[in-house]
Amino acid sequence: MGTLEHGNKCSNAQMFKCSNALMNSINLPAIEGGKPVRKDFLVFGRPMILKEEIDEVLETLRSGWWGTGPKTKFFEKEFAKYAHAKYALALSSCTAATELALDILEIGTGDEVITTPLTFVSTANVVLHRGATVKFADVDPNTWNIDPKFIGKTITKKTKAVIPVHLHGRPADMDAITKIAKDHKLYVIEDAAHAAEAWYHGKKIGSISDFTAFSFYATKNVATGEGGMLTTNNKQWFETAAIRALHGLSADAWNRYSAYGFKPYEAVYPGYKINMTDIQASLGLPQLRSIEKSSKVRTRIWQEYQKAFSKIESLIIPATDEANTVHARHLYALVLKPEMFKVDRNRFVAALQEEGIGCGVHFIPVHLHEYYRKTFGYKLGDFPESEKIGLNIFSLPIYPTMNKNDVSDVINAIQKLVDYYRK
View (cartoon, rainbow, N blue to C red):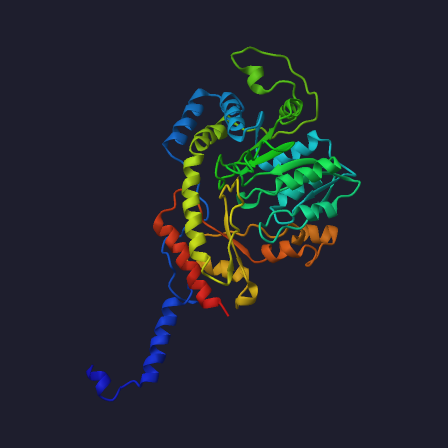
């Protein structure tokens, strides 16, 4: 008080300026020299590994059977039940499952496969591995999933299949896609890497199309580190897939070497090496048993995010769920309205990381990746809806082990950066 009264008084204008400077320093993003929202970094995705998973793995290790065996077979049966599919084949990845489906359907050189550009590159890469041509159909700006009307415009005489992606866990418009496929005699292979829990119009994802591919990568809702599953209702396709997934041998290792006795085998096809192991299946089984419980936690976090971010005009939030569908809540993503920010998405994401919040980008449109640009001549403007989303999208942490403080920190960090970087 004495200092202010004797020779160092501040005018009202100076006090206001000092107050603003103090507030700006408090709200300054960490990347700009301010204090981060969190001291300990909140990782983007963390699998929930509990005692049940550990015990299951230890049991398998002690059994001496680590490769594809009884645990994998049981996991397949349990997942088929969960997906309401007649058959399920456990594999090394969702990517492998999708390529195997293309192989079974004899899709290759001279054929075209339609998919969305707003997906991970593996969805398109597997088509190229088969020697076929990828054709992209743009997305619906509301759902961010492949738009059936663009599928119809992309079909040619060479088109053999469609790969819809259930982006972030939201089911694609399978009624329209199935009708288009039926009208044009096309196969449908669903990319359900994000959609283990999803339902569409009362039908479980995994039971609708010719094939459905799932992922059990470390960040997925069912996590085995690496791994995937292919479901189908066609017995002949399933049996063929089981042979081709393991070198094309007529009998797998469990049938060749188990206590049930030796059975002669031979290679009946130049197959792949994409089988799942019993160690992976040991993680998957308890994860599958707890999936619905975990889903309730994801849904609660999702709803908190929706409530908070719906109030921020400069952000686009995920669309409301369609009636009679279940969103798997695998990823929660926001889209910046670029005209309302002083920075681009990449700078915003970097700033969010510096606040102690892990995040991801799901996804950069496939056609804008270097290989696809240079090889096929794709350029900015080819698929405008995918680009509006993919160039401005980022994903936030959403997993069962997050607590209330974690969720609050994510929300506060986003609000802090929006306030600072908004025009």
